[in-house]
Length: 239
Image (cartoon, rainbow, N blue to C red; front, side):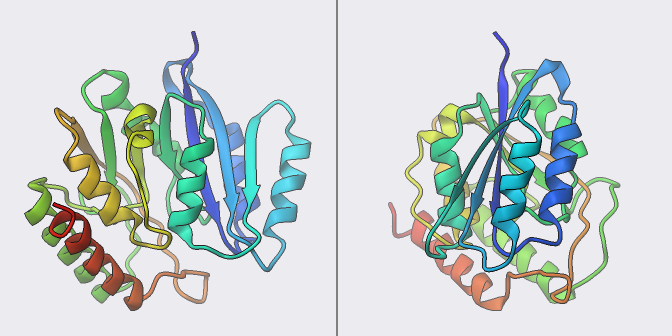
């Protein structure tokens, strides 16, 4: 029986990039004859994002697509949690609606899982020889600090806890109770998978084509402070 990869795409005001990323995913060939399912969650966009999604779906009836739209903006974590609920595939990966990450690198993340060596695979922007756009010094320091602090409590040796590219066996991800509605998803899910018995977590190097704020980047220092709180919340206070 064909196994399927569910690709969860949270979107908020991404009319400039959403169609391009959806077309890339439509044309993407996955290894081992994996099927694919797009699970698109629009977080009450104020621009033309939702209409673009609807038109794309109508124009590609051969593609397995689910989409959901919140009536009130709730945050990326809420969109991801809805996507996880809707996903029906054997594996789940997160794909931002912008163009910062390259879906052609899914094969790198899938390899350890398809070889039955991993249950979860993180795509690291800070390892390997792949292209990495040079942008914000303090963002890099912040990401590495949050990863370091998270590792102290989870006893993992990740290099990029805050990465978008996280690939999961669906049964493991669906077995977690996730609560964060905004950008606290990353430290929360990392803390909770680290406590799954006999979990096998891998990390592979990926490319990163970061955006500036003028190009649509949304995360800011306040989200970094919240991520810091979530590291303590889900590692220390949850025990």
